[in-house]
Every structure is written in C-alpha cells, then in structure tokens.
Length: 261
Ligand SMILES: Nc1ncnc2c1ncn2[C@@H]1O[C@H](COP(=O)(O)OP(=O)(O)OP(=O)(O)O)[C@@H](O)[C@H]1O
Ligand SMILES: [Mg+2]
Image (tube, rainbow, N blue to C red; front, top):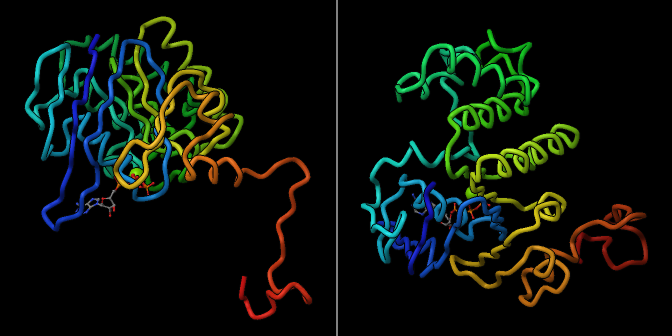
C-alpha cells in the first residue's frame, strides 16, 4: 500500500500560470478524500502531480516516506480516471479494459479475464464489451474508464469528476462499490467533485481548493455543515433545496427585464 504525502507542492506552468500553490496533502491507506473547488482552481493539476503525470515546480512528493521524482511512473500504485476519459478509439470496450493489465504483465490470462468481467458486471457494461468507444454514449464511455481503472486494482484511485457524470442509480452503485472495495482492500480514493450530493455520502476528509490554495479542510460533514470560507458557503447555498424552482429571467417588475440582475 502506498501512503502519499505532498509537501508544499507548487505548479507553475511555463506561461506563468500558477495552478497550485504550496499544497500540503497526505493520503493514508483506505482514505476517502474529496477535493472540491471552482473550475480552474487547480484540482486536476494537483492530482496529475500525485499520479506522476505532471512535473512539480516546487515542494516534494513522498511515497512511503521516500521522495520521488516528479514524473516517475507510478501506474502500478495509482490509477487516474480523467475528466476527459481517454479511451483507445480503435480498441473494443473489452480490450480497452484489458489493455494496461496486459502490458503491465504479472497477471495471468484467466485472472485478466476475471477482472475485466467483474468490472464490466459492476458497471453494467456487459452488453457493450465488443463495441468501439464511438458506439457508446458519453456515460457509457465514462463507465468504461472507471471499470478500466478498477480492473487494475490500484492502491490509490483518483476519479476526476467521473462519478458525478453518471446517472444517479449507477452513481449510487459505484459509490457503494468503492466503499466495499475500500473495506476489503484498503485502497484509497481521491475524488474531484463539484457535486455536494456525491461528496455528502463520503464521510472522510474534504479539501476545498480555491485559486490553487487549500482554503478549507476537515471531515466532510463538518466542512459542508459549517463552512468557513466564503467559497464553501456559496457552494452550499447554491444547492437546490426541495421545492426549489428555476427562476425565470425577465419577469416583469423584477428589474430583470433587460437581463440586468
Ligand atoms: N498546460 C497548461 N498551461 C497553462 N495553464 C494551465 C495548463 N493546464 C491548466 N492550466 C491552468 O491551471 C489552472 C488550473 O487548472 P485545472 O485543470 O487544474 O483546474 P480544475 O480545478 O481541474 O478545473 P475544472 O473544475 O474546470 O476541471 C487553470 O487556470 C488552467 O487554465
Ligand atoms: Mg479539472
């Protein structure tokens, strides 16, 4: 099992954009962590550095206490499901799921078949195993990406907005499944999410990023029930409540006739 510590990690892109500022983060075995924050605040960049996919421009990453080179391959331990799930277009669903396992080696043919079959069953992908990605809907492609990562049985699984995109019945199933797998294997998860309903179900730690910095962190329920930072307060206030109706723009007498708020 890999325990990962980020110590003051910074990412400045060559064009001068600082995407992540002095981020401290530790991920223990079996932890379920949620990263929330507005679009562009650095969530994906931070986790790409965790996964070894992005060069670090300041600070240190330690895995099991050892500093690691930024972009050392860590695909044995860490699997990431991308926001823009990158499937191989010329391979079938089955082969997409089997690809990295096959090339990584160390897994027998029988075990590979079993792992792919299990992941396909869980994500309800059995009818589509022979199809190519272009013959699937967006949600189905997203499920293939999650199934592929699960089949690799990583120590740390990073899901970048991948659960929120699923329809609610499958979302609940996937969340339950993630919790079961964690109980059995101590895999750690980091979810990136905008969706408070998803975050809510996960009881561990929540980290709120804003403009590349951590502005709030703590047990998820506490962060959501008693938000301290203005961004978290707004995020919470923006969740529609029962009975909420979309307000129509331009209703006479509201001063919005001309689109002026
Ligand atoms: N290769 C790059 N070069 C320059 N700037 C970049 C690059 N990649 C990302 N950025 C910038 O870094 C910031 C953080 O981007 P990132 O993708 O980490 O945001 P995010 O929190 O994942 O947003 P979203 O919720 O929209 O996915 C943004 O301002 C983005 O424009
Ligand atoms: Mg992102």
